[in-house]
Length: 310
Image (cartoon, rainbow, N blue to C red; front, side, top):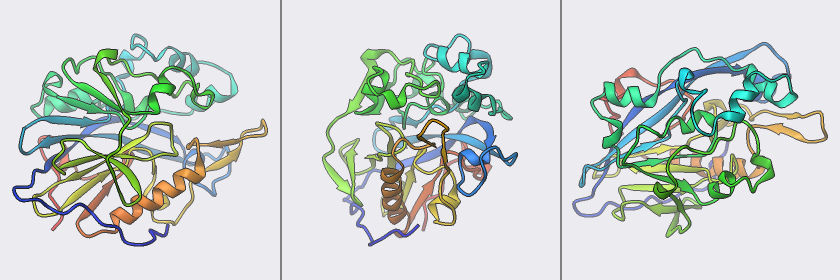
């Protein structure tokens, strides 16, 4: 995928704040490869086993803790977890679309709450949870995060309210966070690389990016990981596989049998445009782009952390 023209990243300020970033185990899932990668015939037996990785970010100046995405809920909690009623029904249904969910398996039993505790952080010590989007394998279980504010993209509000027919599907799940602690980003102060951004702490340490195309309200995070210009870019589900980002493969798109298109992205062309802009950011010096569904080194999971690129 061509990244186009180089982009500019915000310069470092004096005494620049930054974010320490660690990975969190959000479980694993396995699914048919034809749902993700283009060029694979629908119904092929080829499968992809992938993680659902979340991230803990700690603000160097204030110590405030931010979690980006909550991964997959524990299997034993699914039957009682608010919002998952349609999802649970779909897992055991014979209807056409829910049958796709029945092709998913869960080879790992990790969850973000356990990953935090194992790394020395209690869920109630988390100050902010940013949800990339409202697909079931990213919203996890919000209940243990009793003090956190939940941040979502503005368009996710309409999805939660059921206003968008395209997103009335079992895989789209309203998050179980209390309404009074949910906040929707409606103002984007500036842009980076052609993407609208919100300077979350107001000091250039962490930007929430408006990354449209996959699901309404999808957001990514661009975090400064050193005071001298290293960055990490967390892209959620804008890209599911590294080969797609690198232009070696396209994402999957199939006839749904009803005159429409079956695709992981609500707006495929808008997703391609967003991916090009994210790729341009990755091509900048000292920027590390991380996918939610790609295996990474065990040393970067909490209490470990990512080393800033030199």
